[in-house]
Image 1: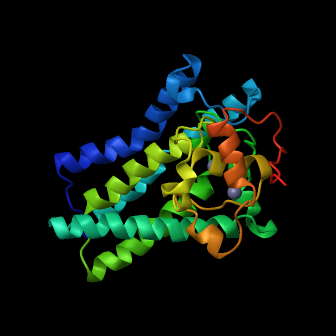
Image 2: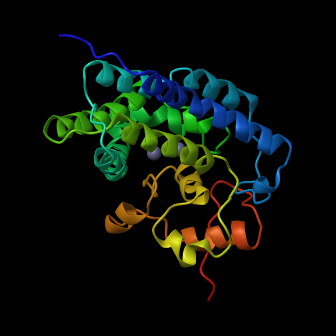
Amino acid sequence: MTLSTPSTPTVAVLILIAVLGHVMAGFWYLAGRRRWTICSRTIYDLPVSPEQIRREFWNSLHAPSHAVWLSLFVLAGFFASTTWTSFVVSVLLTTAWAEIWHYASHRAMHWKSLHWIHKEHHKSHLNTYLTAVSFSFTEKLIFDGGLLGLLALVDLVAGLNVYGVAAWYVGYLLINSYSHANFEMKSPGYNKWVGQVITSTTYHSLHHSRYTGNYGLGTRVLDRLFKTEWEDYERLYARVSDEKRPLKKLSEKVPARS
Ligand SMILES: [Zn+2]
Ligand SMILES: [Zn+2]
């Protein structure tokens, strides 16, 4: 088999998606430490142990592995289409498939028999600037393997574009970093419109603090369809974001007003 030689821009994009998770971790570290305005709405007002930060840091060392897997596909000649149409199709397909694959594999990893794969990410009940890059090697491999594997199959019949796939990774690394930031950045009232479909940091924080429910990656669609969304999510969001009253306990719920 002859290997394809990636162009300089392709190599640059692969390096970008390799380091972006850690760059964003650094950004949230600085933002939290210097109390930037974007950090004014804390979700859980609870301390983080230095042990958690150490553990997440060691887990993060293999976090750039998705760039390695994507590089191997590129070297093998996949995702070589260069048209604008293939770029747009690649972005849309990767976005849709990532949402479905993440939800399905995530729920499977909450089964007792498969939970060992996902356990490491869940040791963080309270999220920090490093939780977004703290996964077991196997969990990363399954997520990226399933994501890129199906895209590679599609590529065999309808050429896909590496920049389209990488663009999804850029978006994912940016969004996932603030989804684990323990600060709510979305506006008060967000759940009236866009928030009916798209998740928030509070949404994923609940998955960590309560260990189940709210499995979705970027949207609420599949959680609603399969009835796995926490019932008090919107009230809890309003408390954190509109009222600026952080939660004081991981188990805290927000009952409906009678
Ligand atoms: Zn989980
Ligand atoms: Zn998480």
